[in-house]
Length: 243
Image (cartoon, rainbow, N blue to C red; front, side):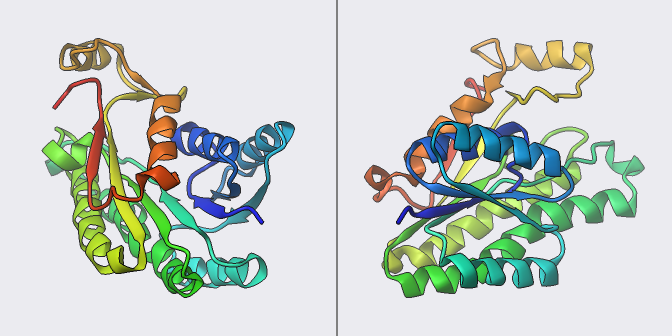
């Protein structure tokens, strides 16, 4: 039986690329989505066209009760996940004085609280399986150095790093590794960025280009592999040399 990986936010962008790559590595994929059902269906079709195995799972990562109910039901039906890629997130950018309470809360609830909401129902079944496991958290360069206009997002992504390092210590004896990936500027195909701002951002990137979703997926593939069993509690940047 194939080991299953839950990938949140897998209907587009980085999450979709990760789901596709991990399926090529031989994992069965639980494709999570919130609102973009068609995107999730497209991800599933792409995986199945190459002989992979995938299923859809829908919930709001910011809704703790919903996460618990749906994830527990999925595990009851299909068994514990071998790994989780916590990727789903949102942005609500703006200068701090202009940030509304909703701008702050929505980003924190979605990007940071999802760490608990998604992982908490997954951990004990993984432990009981006694087969080790992999947890990969998609953070951001903003969580490492902060970013102008992203106080809320930077706070959430920095929080993910702290939580991941602590959880890695707790789960190490269970042979479950926990690592963060901190992408820089990645071309997701849906990047909404002012051309002048993009030009300025490029000046900060020694490689003078945006990253590709496939490059983030490739790093995720390594961290999810058996050969990465000695890598845990790390934050690995993929940002073209920005920092």
